Length: 172
Image (cartoon, rainbow, N blue to C red; front, top):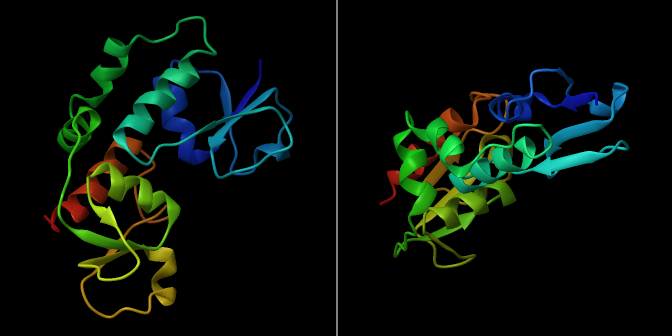
């Protein structure tokens, strides 16, 4: 089976135990049997869509991708990947509820904000959270939190979570 993955998903593919794959930002440019890509992406070939915005999404994505191999990973196996990442471990298994209202400017950030226990609102908010690529669309001028998106952040999903969550933890 020829697997094609996008750069954003490559680390998940590696962790799931797949070593024979091709990386291309545009999987349809390759001839392959299966594309592993972010859930927001669409391709013509058969695909496996994953999400990697939150620790639980990363955990589930590694499990999901490992199912296509001969050596499906156990929960314990996957948990070992989280060992060096404190915020990833903290938010993987805990449910938080915070009395902080946040206006959010993107779907991927909604996943993160909800995972961290903040309330998502459109009005009467304490903070505005937006991805760097929407900076020019933000109409508010106070209590802004800019979160790095895809281009200016590590492709490693654990490092990405650590950076994003640490920025949002300043709101606590």
